[in-house]
Amino acid sequence: MKEKLKVAVLASGRGSNFKALAEACAGEGYPGDIAILIVDNPDAGALQVASEMGIDSVVFDCGPKKGSMTLESSERMVEICNEKGVGLVCLAGFMRIVKGRLMDDYVGRMINIHPALLPNFKGLNAQKQALDYGVKYSGCTVHFVDKGIDTGPIILQKIVSVEQGDTEETLSARILVEEHKTYPEAVRLMAEGRVRIDGRRVVIKGHD
Ligand code: GAR
Image (cartoon, rainbow, N blue to C red):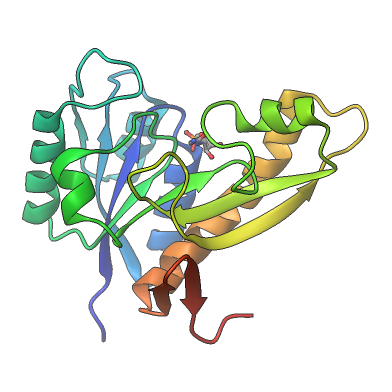
């Protein structure tokens, strides 16, 4: 049997996408395996999920600057990922911009999920941005991480209709349902070696 792709998940909060990935990885025949959860916040709900599921986790001090990470923490994350044989880094609600060695060493092997149809509504509070703009459709995007903010090549997108009377909470909840399906699907495609970057485009073998 082919060896499973070892995945590191980076999260800052609740951890529902981490949970969706971990549950997919626990499923029979799924080609990925969570090697470690890395969080930047000791209160992250994701830690509880990891402990319940018996997944190794580590809390990192990424420095005091909101949205940023120290080069030292980036370096240490790479060391841990290397020790664990990680082949794919998944950002799942990790609220810091990745830079330094983690960015350099994992370019093309690091992906993120964003709660909007990129390139619209990058950055924070994407669901609120979409509502405020008045779009009729939003959704979620899984994309490669590059040095920009939510700018890397797009792997998968799912559309979610915006309904009359939607609030940030109701729209976010419907988008989240799609996130939990889309992220494991993207990791599966990566693990099966079916994803290739061609300039800005991502070509997926045998995928409609
Ligand atoms: C998710 O909606 C994810 O798409 C979003 O944070 C939430 C994390 O929830 N990420 C971003 O906004 C990144 N720009 P979770 O901790 O329950 O997975």
